[in-house]
Image 1 (cartoon, one colour):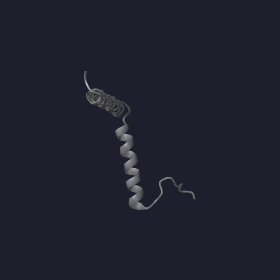
Image 2 (spheres, helix red, strand yellow):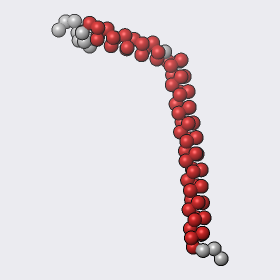
Image 3 (cartoon, rainbow, N blue to C red):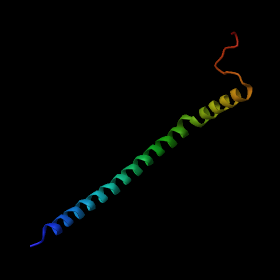
Image 4 (cartoon, helix red, strand yellow):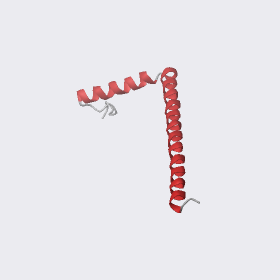
Length: 77
């Protein structure tokens, strides 16, 4: 008949094995989520011309920094 110590050791090892399996599964799920998000972003950039919009925005910011003018300010004020 196994002692209480052996029983506890076997029980803890079985729990640790389950935790390790679940952590690996979680990592795979995160990788799949990141992959899907990446595909959605690539699709959005290709179909919605977001690269042009982001390029225009960054150019507006660069112009504002270089000239010191606020691009939101109206010329009448």
